[in-house]
Image (cartoon, rainbow, N blue to C red):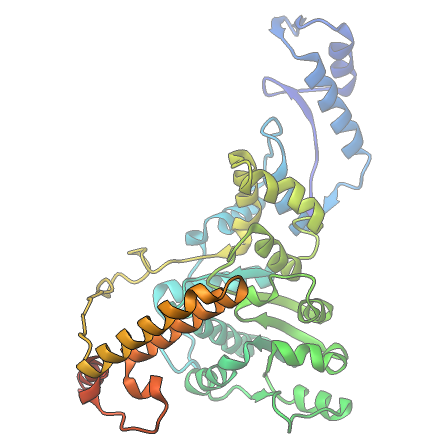
Amino acid sequence: LIQYQYSLSIGGEVVTPKEWEQLVNAKTPLIQFRGQWMELGTQKMQQMLEFWQKHTEEQPEIKLLDFVKMSASLEDELEIEHDSMISDLMGKLQDKSQLTMVGDIPLLQGTLRDYQKRGVSWLQYLENLGLNGCLADDMGLGKSVQVIARLVQEKETTDSTLPTLLIAPTSVIGNWQKEIEKFAPHLQAIIHHGSGRIQELEAFKSTCLNCDVVITSFTLVRQDEKLFNHFEWRRIVVDEAQNIKNPKTAQTRAILKLSAQYRLALTGTPVENRLLDLWSIFNFLNPGYLGKEAQFRKSFEIPIQKDNDRMKSATLKKLVEPLILRRVKTDPLIINDLPDKVEQKVYCNLTKEQASLYEALVKDVAEKINEVEGIKRKGLILSTLMKLKQICNHPAQFLQDGSEFSAARSQKLQRLADMAEEAIS
């Protein structure tokens, strides 16, 4: 909890509520106060008095998350003076470079880069404050290893016996298991997936309590909702969090019902298509922080996306910045010991076989295109584009006739073979 106190002041000097009321009641913009003439906006002063009266009647304590929200949302006329502890806390939330970087983690089988150490420090700092955040580093910067490092660090320093639930797309469940085996083989991780998964409640509870990480998919969180809801998790980690960008889907609603001490979202695209994506992720992390969906749409999405309201954009940035850590590959401070990515275009000519197939397909479609319309016309164009790509890859992929998949029939395949040899060597 944060304790706070409001006071009224003019020119840095504290004014009593009685003096303030006298100034308001004077109903004149020019007034003599404590030996000085000054110009005052009586309407604004009335608003300030009402604000003071309203908030001094409340209990002068507030949750930290609400304090962060209030600090970002207050109008410019209201100045907040923090004590040294709160100043330090807010400074670290707003400028992650102020965080003390974690040292080496002995049981982690790998070496973290400096920016990854800072990411682990940030995760630890947020959780110590009871806040939930979004790790939004670019793809390839090692979000998974930062999470694993945090799990290892926590296992070394706390006595918690509750497991972490890691929800990921089905295609990367195996990747997570391999990453854990590589960087933290001492962590007990199980995969809840497939037809052989545990579906009896007591057996599921017993198995989970004997492991550190339970890995499952978005689909199974919805299908096995009763299993996951009868359990208190240490933390819930949602990988590829853009999968919960639609708050109305059954899988998003199922994830929101889960009970956990901490929540963490991982995504390289916190705003994939529209600002509501960001709201949905924060609705998982800290429900109510950005208001209800309709309120967010009215306050931020419409003014920012339709009207390009920079004031609203700045306010939203202040709200989410303390709870998002985003680093991009183009930042030289992130990976300053690696060269820039080199892109090189290599042009591969069609073989005679490919060229003849390509020309024949184009002629065939040119004859059919005027015979169809509407959705059938669109379907014909899409299927033709796919066939043309297949021809450019290799004739055998297009023909599907079981013929030889040799490099002689496609320069593209030959170039791919050359690149593979270069990479292996």
